[in-house]
Image (cartoon, rainbow, N blue to C red):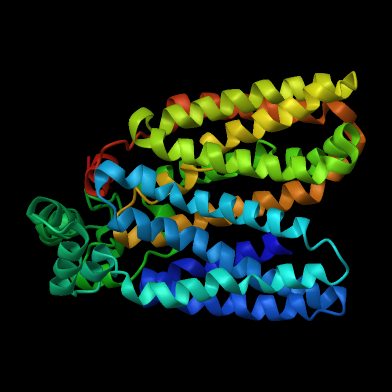
Amino acid sequence: MFAVGGLLGAIVSAPMSRRFGRRDSMMLMNITFFIGAILLSTSTTSAQFAIGRIFVGIGAGYMTVVVSMYIAEISPPRYRGALGSVLQLGVTLGILIIECIGLGLSSPVGWRVVTVMTVAPAILQMVCLPFLPRSPRWLVTNNRVDEARQEMLRLRNGNIDQEYNEMLATLIQGYDRDEEKKTKYSDNDTDSATGMPESSSPAATAKARDTNLSILQLMSVPVLAKLTVKMMIVHASGQLTGINAIMYYSTSIFQNSFTDTARYVTVGVAALNVALTVLALGLVDRLGRKMLLLISAIGMCIFSVLMTIGLKYNISPLQVVCVMLFVASYAIGLGVIPFVITAEVYPTYAVGTASSIALVINWLCNFIIGLIFPTLQNACGPYVFLIFAGITFVVAFFVVFFVPETKQKSIDQSIRGHCFS
């Protein structure tokens, strides 16, 4: 049910973040965490518990889209990859904190205390978000240019002329090209900046900059459609390569190997996930997005094969090591990079819809794996992880040949490279 809620949250993220802005819409969506926490902590039926999970999932799904957009739009190019990775760090850190709290609350009443803690980050956001700047890019697309400049000065605390002018140039580039071609419009004419027919171009008028592209408009633009398919595959890879399956299996593996101390080992895995995510923060702007994705996919492929061997021949130490290293491989690349790169390659009028589509695929694949993995496990036995090994091998190939590199580029340089070339 959490994944279903995440799917719904990702769907509504584009129109809401475009209408209310990144910062203010995040404040608004914290309501879902309050509702979810109340329903979960007071639930007396499975239906109420499921509805509570859906509400929390809606908030989580929304935040995964909008937080990555917001961070990308306010971060300087030099640190954007590391700052964008903070989203996944927050996720892994939250899991670790709850795992630790759960150690002392493993009682019939304790789970209610754990679920009500959902409101803690929501309260923190409600208190802190009003003090954060709005996205300058969002302000510009809403014709609030002076405010955008003030917010950028607040963010950079220095000379912003080059970055500010680059942002404005990118946002109006499509419009300028469209204006040049108005007198020679025909049914077959297209906007050279976007590849769309001029009558439906997102840059056809200044007013068009105030509205987000619909899914149909986005997918009718060849260059944006191509990018979106790539981002959909990247996000699907984060789920279809088996991270939730390995975590599902880890419980029984640790119980067999460590019996009474299994729950402490589970906390150790969560801590390892945090540590490798922190490492990814330091490497993403040095090695680049593609390199970390490649390292991640290759590592997950290798440890999926070794996990199969460990399960087949009942080698408990090998199983434990594979769980640890599989999680580490995921954390350093496929757990972080999809959220970073999606917000870096689209113009502002497309990023909301594109990010929403990508995260819908992410949550949908999360839901599908959770639904079908028990059936796959029963049908394939220990060989089930060979399926994930095959998927990660294909993902590695895809990363090498099709994923764009955005390391050390401003958002506007990335956009011009993909959309206006």
